Structure formats: structure tokens, C-alpha cells
Length: 109
Image (cartoon, rainbow, N blue to C red; front, side):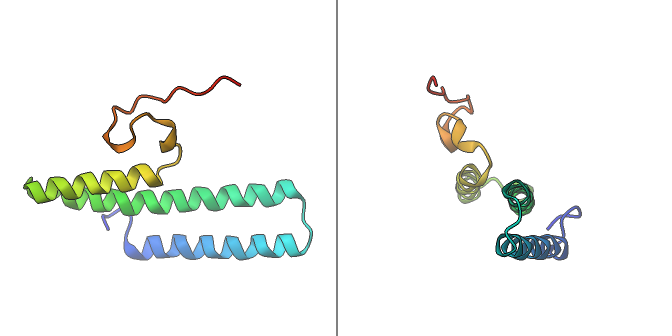
């Protein structure tokens, strides 16, 4: 992991998310308001997105810091495909990892 995201920092973030999920389960058991539960679910989603982005960012930094051999380029392409599957909202772009990152046309309501 690079300086801004050490393995310990990512681990701490994941443990925090784990605690939030347990808290959500308690909220459901205690019949808390739906809005409160959904708010906590959104916080968990955000935490997971951030942890995943930090891990992928570090991986890509390591790949880019090394050689530009065909194997490395193939590895980068695989990493980008993984990013497109993980990234929030990535499904809203035409072509995905091999496309031109233009927003996909949305059907009329």
C-alpha cells in the first residue's frame, strides 16, 4: 500500500465497516426507522467503495511504477476491468473497460 493507505489503515477501515454492519443488524432487530437503517447502509457502501478504491489505486500504482512489458500491460488491462466492475456507477458508461468512457444513454422514463 502507498503512504496514504497502509495495510493497517485499510484493515482498520474494514473493521469499522464490520462494526457498522453489526450495528445495522441491531437496528433491524430493534425495529429502528427505515430511514436510519438506509442511512447506515449508505455509509457502509461508501466505506466499502473507499477501501476498494484505495486497494485498486495501490495496485495500479505498483503496476505503473514497473516496466511496460506486454505482460504488465495485460495486467493493467485486467486491473482496469476489475475497476469497471467495482466502481460505483461504472455500469452507466458505454463500453465499460474497453469503451471510451462516454455516458451510456439512459432510457426515457
